[in-house]
Image (cartoon, rainbow, N blue to C red; front, side):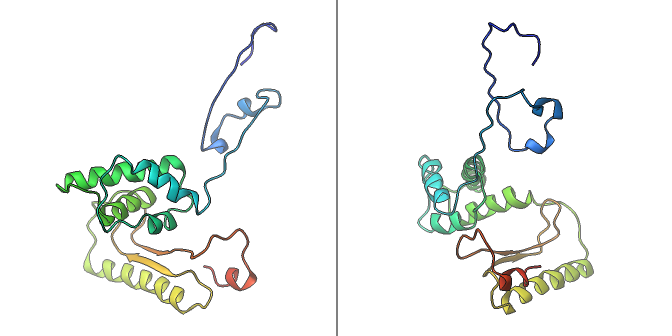
Length: 184
């Protein structure tokens, strides 16, 4: 970054989704004149992005891109493209001619949680994981201001032994005290 003659024009373009891990020497004052931050898309944009990336993929009749957009809030454009590509690969491996909702949901699980882990879990440990996830699901169901329950699983993926997922019905930028005091 140093050593250029004053009459030379050098343009450096870079992109990262992890600015927190950049070398501090790159971020010193005077290194870059402009820093442009792109926020992740809001709830309406993922649906449009999914339309674009699924144009070249034959979708089955059961595919609900509105639901898929709702459960992928916070995904970047690249994440959504990866989701569509992954679902097409999964459908192809299963010999399907179209990408169905099951393939899309499985691809989403892979993107969010990681691939299925090949660990062997005994029956007692499975029972403990099931009790644990059931506790999350029960509390989520009983709390009046909690987001609706979408999925509960004890299939180990990535670093998780199980997962309980709630999907917000509406996009929120601020949370009321009644919502925050019940989140866990």
